[in-house]
Length: 74
Figure (cartoon, rainbow, N blue to C red):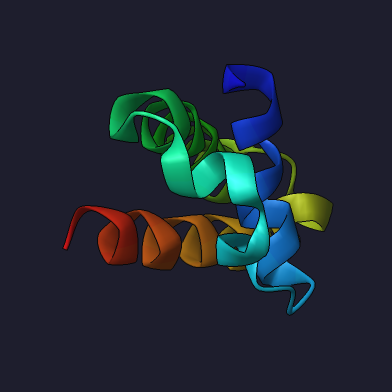
């Protein structure tokens, strides 16, 4: 489950509704939200400190993940 949660920001970035995945609806919040938050934080780090040529794409990914985490935790 936790590894599957790493898909959340990618699905959102691709304009897919991650809430449509049944197991994510019933899973404990920390099981889904925690890994997605860590994924998003890492993308934020790379957006600020990574190679110039990938910073913009990582910033978009971090924003998508951050939006979903905020939605998930209210």
